[in-house]
Length: 198
Ligand SMILES: C[S@@+](CC[C@H](N)C(=O)[O-])C[C@H]1O[C@@H](n2cnc3c(N)ncnc32)[C@H](O)[C@@H]1O
Image (cartoon, rainbow, N blue to C red; front, side, top):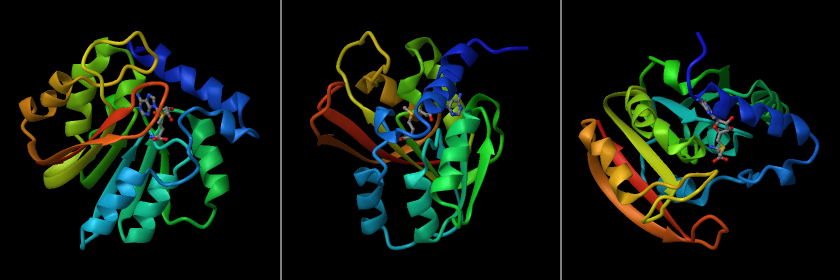
């Protein structure tokens, strides 16, 4: 039975298909590690255990996590994105998996989520937060990166408000740090980087 979010999630595969050879046309694809993940990896000394990258896209972030020492699973609903990622990193020690985050019950020591939650309409927010929290093992960590907005925004994407970021605490996570970073963008010049523990 198709779920309500499927239409929104399926849209991504078409965009990846159209831009198989023009990755620069994929708006979120930096083709470089997310700097807010890199600074986390630089600051933390120990990188071991099972890591999950949610909505991995072209997978530069998954690649850096694997190089840091994690056993990485990278999931995305778009098979095209996963094929492109595998072609970019053929020797990577990463398990690429076509997987809907709303239907995933496996738990990880470290979960990295950047820009997937905000890529689906606000009506899916609470369900999405629950789905993300469900992938973290007890004692595991979540590093969340998302654009920040104070008020609702007519997306896509739909950046997170501070109240929506609070949903993770309501789901039982402990916030270890929350930083607001500035970087120019058409969507919002501020973004959250929040580290949680379960
Ligand atoms: C805005 S992109 C961000 C990609 C990547 N995280 C990055 O920072 O470059 C959102 C990604 O989430 C994937 N996605 C959308 N809905 C999903 C779902 N329900 N489960 C898993 N992945 C999903 C899309 O295919 C897309 O690759």
